[in-house]
Structure formats: C-alpha cells, structure tokens
Image (tube, rainbow, N blue to C red; front, side):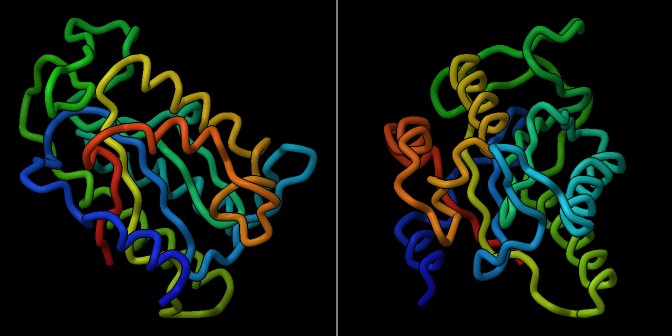
Length: 216
C-alpha cells in the first residue's frame, strides 16, 4: 500500500448522508499518481509551470465553462509540482462573499457549507466536476507527452466543506502562499518537515468535514 493510500484510508471516502449537489464552497486537493512531480518546479517560493502545468491550469477553468453551476477564480487556485488546490463554488451564479449580486453568500449553520441564499436550478455534484476535469486534463497531458492511457491522477481527491467566511479567508491565503511552503508540503516527496499551516487549517476541525473521496 502506498503512502497516499494509507493516508486516505484513515478517513471515510464519503461524508455519510451529505448532499454534494448542495450549493456552497468546497476546498479541493487533487494529487498526481505516485506524487510524481509533473507540472513544473518551485524556485525561490514561486511556482514555475511547465507545459503540463499550463494544461492543468487551462483545463481547471475550461471544465467550469460548460457547467453553469460552477464558479472558479484564479485567486482561489494553484498548480503545484504534483498537486493542485482550488476552491469550487457550486450553485447557479455562485460567487464569493462581497460580490455584487442580489443573493449574497452567507455562512450557514449545522452541516451546510458556505452557500448562496437562492438557486435557479439544482446544481450538479462536486464529484461530477472533478471527474470531468481530471479526465480532460489527463487526456491532454497524455497526448502532449505521447503516453496514451497512462494514469495521471490518484483515484481519490481531498475535499473540505467551507462553512464560514473566516474559514474561506484562511483557505484562500493557504492557496496563495502554498509555493512558499513547498519545502514543508505533505505532498512533497523531499519535504524537510511538517506543514503546520495545513494542520491548523484542517486537522483541528471536528468530525468528518474534511476527507478523501473515491473518484476514477
């Protein structure tokens, strides 16, 4: 069993009873197969994308273009050498707090994520978006490097339901500053220590609000 399989099997692959078509904000991490560094390198705290990294960046936002219920922004996304972090907003015209709209997003109580007050139609699931992105990115990557059918991504992905504006702001900062902590990143095969920022963000939460999910 690989490091990542051990890591993810410690948690449930699904939050029991939770509706992932529900409108709201979700923090997502997707890692390459065997944590292979495919997408570029970090130099002096800056992520420098190679051709494969640029494909991943393009496909993340392209995957949302055909899904009206998905909202993504560059300020809430980063491509690292062997993984990505992003915030996915689900809901018709979903947008971040503070955006000019008649249906502002609010921090919900209980099991609900940060969500917009009204929707025009039921959104599709987070898993459907992630599956579409992973498939499209892998196809282009394998075409580019001449490896048709090769596995690019781990089967699982990590997601965290964002419930409050405070959590949203902390996660945004984590995403934007991720390259500065690559030397401590838990996905870095040569990490020199432990990323305490990750620990403080997610491991202090109770229950199963953060977990891995199975996905092809």
